[in-house]
Length: 102
Image (cartoon, rainbow, N blue to C red; front, side, top):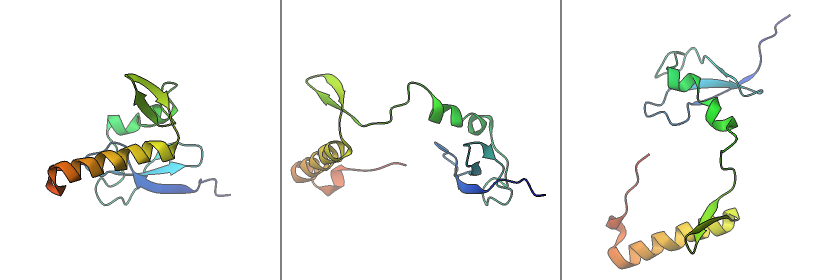
């Protein structure tokens, strides 16, 4: 009997290189043997990446600042604030005033 689990191939969270990993349904990282960047190997940071996902202090809802204090918000409100801020920067300083790094 074959007891191998189905996996989802993805890129390791926060990886600047783009290392491929496979994730099982029960959220374990397993080697993605033919991943083009890392050939299934994973660094020590990658091995601990699930700790971030399961940490008790992890934010799971957007937070917005009101009068200096953070509060939970809906996704619509949070995205609306992002769009409004980006449009304001573009209108005041031009589209070249923004850049993104990922």
